[in-house]
Image 1 (cartoon, helix red, strand yellow):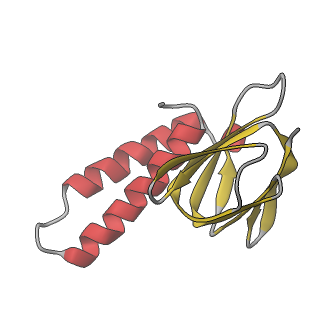
Image 2 (image 1 turned 180 degrees about the vertical axis):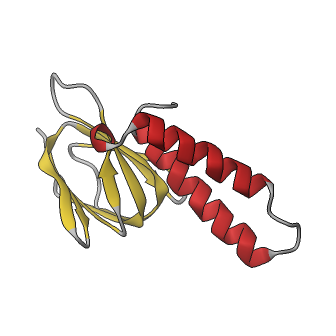
Length: 136
């Protein structure tokens, strides 16, 4: 048996196909989904979703927060934004990741808003870089 997996962002459907296995970046850690999984609704963190179909390699998709619903072998993922790893330029994502890491390290202690913004930018850059294959 397989899963029907849909990744839907406000501007497009990023993925709509059958898969054997899905790994999601939930807010409580990595969440693996196989056929026959119990019904579930979970918040997703900014991170990398991995999906694999029989005989295929893993496909990485950068997710920028959202929700996942699992019900009767259907996985519906609603996200703020998503990008397939094979469409992300590795070098550009590496540069953006390094810049975000530098900005996060330079935030003035006590500036809560700057800390939150820098942390979110870092998580987005890291997810895109990981999805592009730059790091595991």
